[in-house]
Length: 167
Ligand SMILES: Cc1cc2nc3c(=O)[nH]c(=O)nc-3n(C[C@H](O)[C@H](O)[C@H](O)COP(=O)(O)O)c2cc1C
Image 1 (cartoon, rainbow, N blue to C red):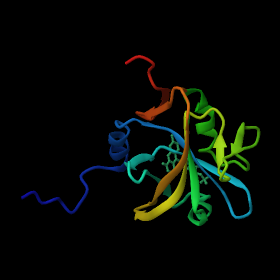
Image 2 (spheres, rainbow, N blue to C red; image 1 turned 45 degrees about the vertical axis):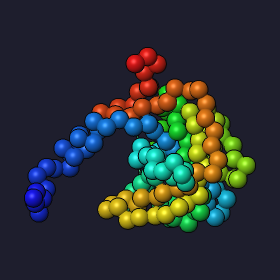
Image 3 (tube, rainbow, N blue to C red; image 1 turned 90 degrees about the horizontal axis):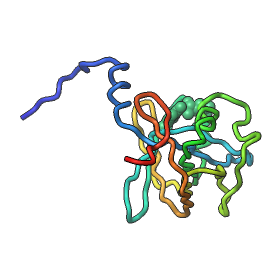
């Protein structure tokens, strides 16, 4: 039987490099806080979990300035960014007073901020939250979605690019 060692055999930069070999899409998780303000942050930790019920997950860093707002929210949206939305992915990853200012966005029928031009949007009810080291894992049940023909933005090897049109 294999016994895992007690100590790590790598440093954090090696861990980051290994993880960057797994390309993902890029999303912006959005909510409206109790005071009615829209909040959003760029994420790449998004993944599918279950088809029935339709569940997805993502994780939020415990240092995120909007952590408390996301903890209080009962619903959130995941905006899966299109290839031409690279500037939006950068905007929602930088500390800025109002990330929505000057952007084209609207409220969904159930009141969640959706970014116009996204490849897809998923409106979710919080299903569960789990501790995950320096992140909190949020599982959401999808209750509404939009899907376009936009090419998705891709994140891998530390770079943002667009999904190849022909493989
Ligand atoms: C491509 C990309 C992916 C990211 N993925 C995540 C993520 O999955 N979870 C997370 O907590 N932060 C992630 N971040 C960092 C946050 O977007 C960033 O720390 C943001 O400023 C947090 O919002 P805050 O201003 O509320 O702290 C990512 C950043 C980039 C550029």
